[in-house]
Picture 1 (cartoon, rainbow, N blue to C red):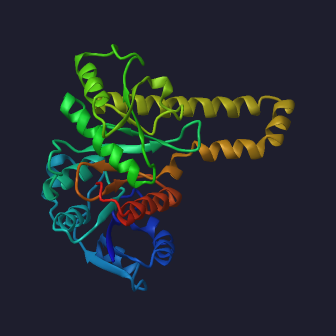
Picture 2 (picture 1 turned 180 degrees about the vertical axis):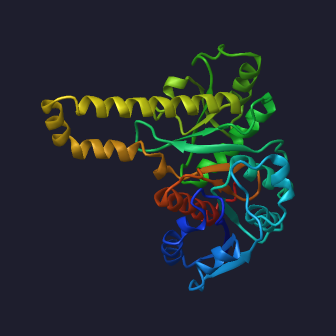
Length: 318
C-alpha cells in the first residue's frame, strides 16, 4: 500500500482547508495510507478519521520565515515529513508551504537522484488544445548550466510520461524558433537535446508559443521561466478585467454576456490553474508537490490527486 505525506500547516488557512477535502480523498483512494503532519490542534480536527496516520509536531513553517529560521525549526510539520520521505517511509509528499521552505527541507533530508545536480520546479499550464504544457524550471534556479537544462529535460520528460503522456514533445524556451538562436548555453543545449534519441525533442519554443499546445514540456532556466510565468499571470489578469469591463459597459454588451455565459464559464474553467494540480519539485526519487499557500479546496484536491496519480504510476520515473 502506498504511503502519502500531507503537511497540514503550510496553507495560509492552516489545517482547516483540509477538513472537508481529506475525507473525500481518503474515501476515493482505499489503496493509499495518508500520513498527516501538524500540531496537536490539527490532529484533533481529524480524530474521527481512522485511516490517517497522525504525526504531532510542535512547530510550523511560516510564509515569511527566513532560510535560517526554517533550518532551525527541526520539529516543523514540513521538516518532519521530509525526514520520513528521506528515510523511505513515504512514497510522496504534499505541502502548501513556501517554496523556500519546501526546497530547503527537501535538500536537508532527501537525496537527489544519481546524476542530478539540482532540483527544479515544474507545473502544468493550460493550452489551446486539450492538454496542459509543463514548464520547468519555474524559479528554483536563477542561473543554470547547459548540464542543468539537459538534466531538467530528461526529468521533465519522465515526469510527464508518468502523468500519462506516452511520448512527450519537449521544447527549449528561447528567443527564436531557429536552431541558431539564443546564447551560447542554449545553442549547446539545443544540439545536445537534438542528438539525444531518448527524448522527443521538438526544438526551440518562443514565449508566444508556450500555450499553443504544440509542446508537452518546455525547459527553461529558473530566471527565464519565472519571468515568463509572471508575465502570463499578469496578462491573464489584465485580459479578464478588460473582458469584464467591456461586457458590463452597456445594455447590449450585458445582453451578449448573458447569451455567452455558458461559453465564458467553459473558457474560465479551461484557463483556471486550480484544475492543473500543483508544482512538482523534480530531481528526487519520490515526488514532492506543492501548491500556493492561498489555494482553495479545489486546488488542494486536484494537487493531492495529482500526487496520488504519480505514486500509483507503474513507471518509476521520478
